[in-house]
Length: 390
Image (tube, rainbow, N blue to C red; front, side, top):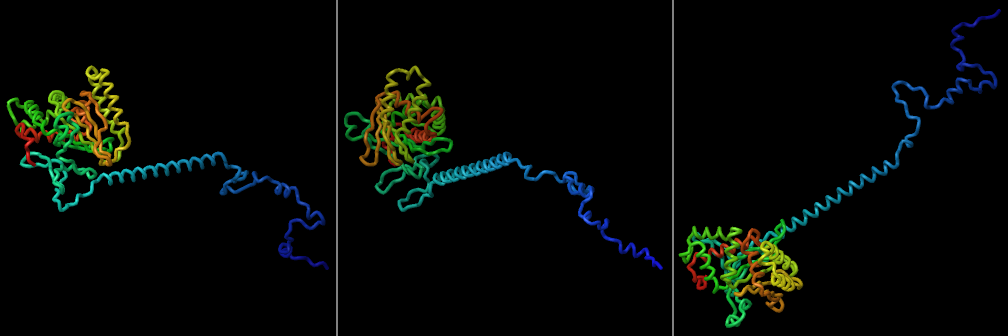
């Protein structure tokens, strides 16, 4: 009797492998399996949710030249940015240091009774007059408002403006008219303080000439006449005409006292003087184009072939009654000594006009201060300034 197997048992105990064991054939892959193993990755099937990966490796997508160029540009821009930042910081530090250096320290009130106000002029009874102080020796001084060169003497005694006679022995007394600071560049860098002095005995002649310019029958000027004269002296054309006439006809003995507020040299001072004289002489070539004037310019340049001019060391430019220019310098060791002379009157006149009149002067504060000093002269009767007691 042959027993039968239940169908369910046949399903449950079905062999796991799809192919029965057939000896050595079990180890041989079928053609379908071979195609699966050797199928290239590029055509491998993926689901629609997964992105297809590139067939080549990521390293093969790199451009070494482009990376090198981007690296170089990045560090070039970075270095440029850092360089400009460093330069901007340096400029800021220099400018801040300069501004701090230029701010004058607050003056201390000493026992000598010096005024707190350092303005060279003060207003008294409606009139502007020089602020005159005295040192321990009793010397009359005028404050400049500058911390490096704080004062100028109100009177100077020099023998440089006199060529002969008793004046050569005793010297000439000069009275300060006005002063100011010479600045250069748009930063307003201060170079030197300059003061204009006139021989005390020659002030009366200047008074008479200026008073007659405004009122021919007067000996002194009142307030509105002083304003008219001030306006005339500050006018570029009329002021130059007035001073040119005074220097050419009245010819007062006068000088400019130059005191540097920082270390400089003779060449730097010479260049400023020569530029000013040349600019004014070129405006009228018929009066200054001859050989004698050219030779005088050569002599003038040669006088400044020297070395340094330390700050606070005094230089004076003296113009005598004949118009001869004398240059003297105090080096701080041997005292005041003569540098040289130029006998051409036209050269000294142009140099004087560079400070006194015109559309462009060497120091606008000095020109305004000199005009105020002239106002102080003309408000007094002619001939009484020399006997004025301060």
